[in-house]
Length: 259
Image 1 (spheres, rainbow, N blue to C red):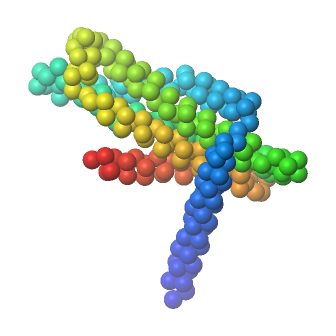
Image 2: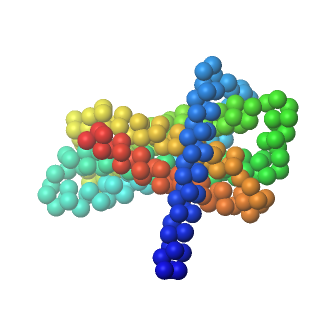
Image 3: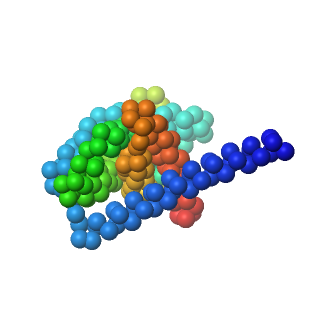
């Protein structure tokens, strides 16, 4: 009986903890929506976050996307070479990159780099009472700190996925030409003829959803940080894990609804 009681107590504690976090995210979402009508943004802070979130993430996204495209070609190239269907190489690599692999890989990279940094920055401001200082100066922390970060993450992840998709296709075309001898023109012909516009927009819808989820989760854990430096570390860890889970859950539901 003691073992059962301990297990039930642990499950109940975890459930209440998760419910508390989900409730906090819902309340933060409401605050964000409330600040959207009319839009309340700090201009310099918004531009700073756009640069920090997007421009500084550009190199790692390009490298990741190019390698992703190359890997997709290598994986599909085995079957393409076996059956001699070289005209389908662009479709095989491009379809998986545009709809699934590209948005997920870039989203995970984005959450690890940008989301973790955002949580650490807000968490440090929280534990050093800078957030309370803004309130004392009659400055809304949601409008000044959260809104610019949410906008920057959604916009920049969308643009990074567009750039990443293009880079992945270029990397796949180059890999196909070098390893399989498939001409880049044939690779491009396969993409143009077999991949639909909705395959591309499907990935972009995921990019917007992933960007908002990463922004919401990282801001939530950052603004609720307690316990000094140790608390900041816990918040960053929780933010990265929650963002990864959110990406896969959203990917499942968006793919299911589009099926």
